[in-house]
Image (cartoon, rainbow, N blue to C red; front, top):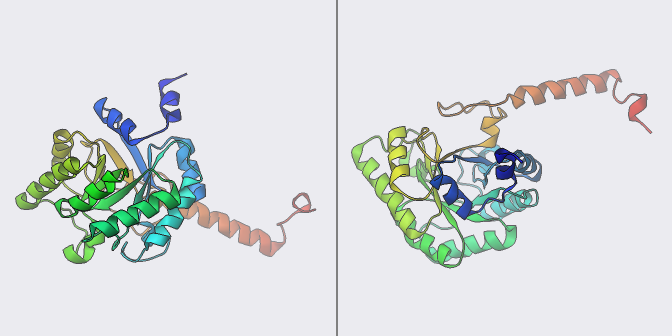
Length: 273
């Protein structure tokens, strides 16, 4: 059996991710929000599936991630969990379910774990949510952090521009990464920061750093599935590499189907009872 096959068959846990960082193996992570897509990603060998609050954008058509609810996240995560045999499933705690109240944060995380069967939760923020992270971890729930550009705070920052370009914000980002590690996070997503800064953090902390728009010096990468597959054509940041053009593929297939229905070509004699 090849090394690639043996790796792809290994069930991914938070401990496995730590081992991957230790041996220098990059971690692959993508979002998924439904059974069918999650089944494809898991069978392809993705390490981590993020049930992201980006479902608010790509599944529900909202402009920001803020409107999605805990119940909706649980629905998406439950659908994903049914499809997955190997990948670690991480679920975003949505806006308003953990900020400022560590008891509500714990309650929200417990609901996700009990009602979805997924493996971990993800939370945006640094030192200001450290107490909530500690409470959740003390209940036996793994937490992935998220620093840099934090979409749930878009109304605070007012822009999706690159974060931590100035020295003061860069120092806080480094400090927050250490605080999240100390609080017990098993990994941290760092979004849209200078590559050298993200690489510095990856070297300084023992836990895996997963980048999105944070360069190649980190321990792994994550993208939104609909962006990576070219289903979403409107979003084109520098960090995005499209691996397919499914918008065109699906559109062309739909047009072909419409044409065949209109012409009477579908169904033919072999496609009926």
